[in-house]
Image (cartoon, rainbow, N blue to C red; front, side):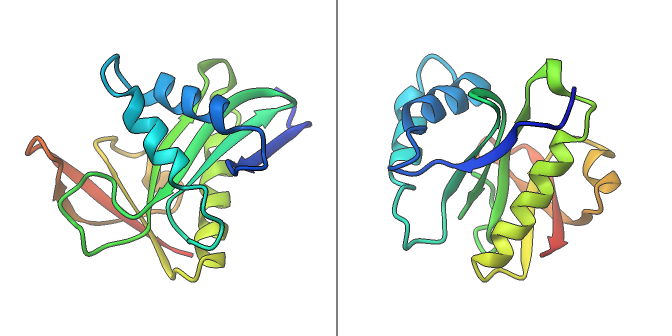
Length: 155
């Protein structure tokens, strides 16, 4: 895949991306019963004066090919840490081309612009984030009690 025509767009009231963004995040991460959860999260993130939460779409032209979010919490026990990098997704046809790394780098810049010195994420993946320069921080627990590894990176 060529890297041309790629943009990373913040979903805002004026971006024209609210409906597409709600549908995309729900398609990637949701279930039949939680569409309203995603809609509510994104619609209430549209306040420009508030640093978090923020939702981003990676687009090639008008096609959405990936996403991420910066959140106050990623439904994990460590409420004392923020911001959280979450909802990283790259469409299968566009994987293994460095796009996840572009989204991670963009998130670090956005977190720094928001005044944050560190960015956290929780995952059950092994090896992926370490290769991207993230360091293991601690274990945390999801709402179902499952343990997740927490990683951190300086912005």
